[in-house]
Length: 363
Image 1 (cartoon, one colour):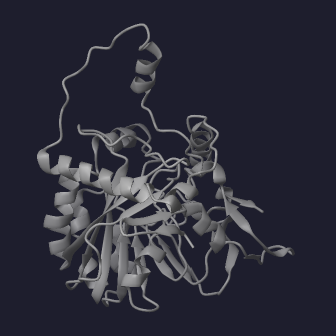
Image 2 (image 1 turned 135 degrees about the vertical axis):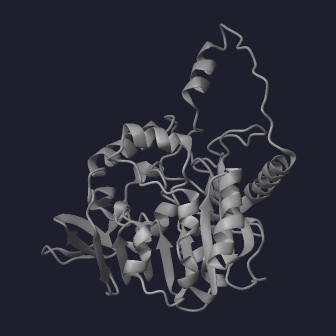
Image 3 (image 1 turned 30 degrees about the vertical axis):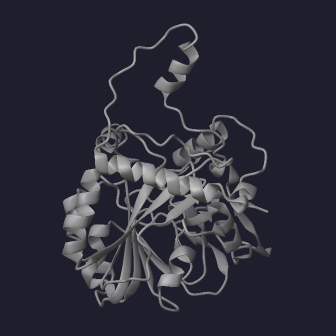
């Protein structure tokens, strides 16, 4: 179970707990020791301090000696400002409960997230060329997790999974458009200046970007079932949000249902950065939910609170959270997937990324 605590405001979720329970019993058919348990690298979730930018660290270092000239604040517009304050209030209500405080009551060793960041860099560098320009597809229909050798590399596969390591522009070539999926999850690689700079400097290691208009043209409407639900991870960019609501959903024949918020916290329960009234980083991302038909069962606002992974785009699992709003034994699809889930189809050229054995330790 990934859900540690559920309340009216939302859920507190433990991402590594969900992964470790999934692989508590793994069948290694390639060797003679057969069953054992695997745990996901715990250092990646060792987020023990607020994230501070280099200029913030320098400012703190010299604050005793030099008073920094304050720049004029670039305040958010009124609607965005109201949303930030509202999310902050919801988060405060959730975290002030006695059950929430118990979850984050353990003492935490502070190292400014150095262990997590170091491990993230190490795994990124060791895996960045994995399957570069390779196109792989496969499925596993067993009822137990296994170690599988793919392209001479070991990967951990959950039960009953299907994967397509292809560019999402090839959806129509690999999936049958029969409106068969009851839930579709998407985490698009939103185009922005930071990613463009990275792509120029590290072209071989950056995720293949797509313009928002290209994502909108994907034939999602032919994949989602008559009463299906879709959820799209979104940054706090107003232009990206408008694209989902004004271009993507209408193009796919989907109605907007709800906006949820993923709040990122440290191991002690603090937000990874402060809620801000100015333009810049917020401690949350958006999850925009739509449906083929109107759906009054899905609440308009919910919080998903969790300690984030230090790996980029490693989103928390939604399977248990979304389950009450789906039919029994639903067919689920993740597009732009970066890891596999039991009983899901995963599509994206990084679909096996977090399944590589290097992310796990044997317990």
